[in-house]
Image (cartoon, rainbow, N blue to C red; front, top):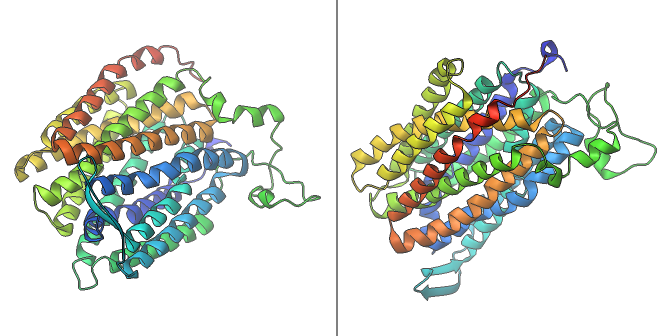
Length: 437
């Protein structure tokens, strides 16, 4: 596909924004729901880990399907799963709060499993198994990007995510402040998911030219995904072999980058399970205050990922921005666990600068080394590594916060410092890149 015929960025940025908006609505009130339905730190950690646990298995499959059948239809399939998950989530809010079993142990603390809590687990599992939309969207973005605009495009993608994270928590806080509590935000998430399906189907063109050409002489269900364009080509057997997940680790430098991906998600998972509990128990915030906090954070990240990253993209290398961003995140995790609200907000500056500079730059590096043919497979494997890290981080983070409190944030700071040290190796990789002629 020539650069002149590549699809516009707008539809995929819109899909990413809508998806993030729907996802981020859950952030401010999930911890309060878990607490209300009988859970504690341990259950909240498990609740958070259910999504990445199922995504761990689903993302590589969806990533490879997107290489083979096209990005658009797999994005549609993933978003349909998200819609179903939100419908199940809504059912949990109306379910009777029947107690099933209670626990009171020193390791996991005291909690009660109830019917709505079990239904919430089912909803998160459904969303996770079809939750490969991030890796497929990143592969789509790589398809339509060139070497000159790759980093800027990933910055725009990250900015669209941050915009979703601004509006999502704010909407949750505002809509959840009525007598209907969480029901209106969840209803909004359902409408947002329907909107995403409409945008994908009617506004998002296919980005891959080499979609499998179907043989309609023998009908198989999987061939429904195989028709997308008139000019499509049959994948050769050797290309079928190349998209296997195992072959991803044979690509030069990809194993090292997957390790960075894993450690990043592990560190952030400690934060995402610990900070809502910290806000609930130490800062004594409600869902509205927590929603405003995340909205301000996302707003600051938009400024970093948009204007600032745009100015730096031509002046600083991806490798340098990863190094600088990771050390700034170390400062964030050291400060974020403070019981002082002012210091907690000060940490947002480090968070926004660190994450806003590091993550788009790292994704740009990963995309460059993945190549064109295996972009979806590499993104899927990386996403699975992130999911595995999230599973471990959310489970361990819940246990750690229940036993050692704010020290959990220092654990995250240590992981980001390890990434800072490892990032210097990427400067050596850059020297070996063969620029296209």
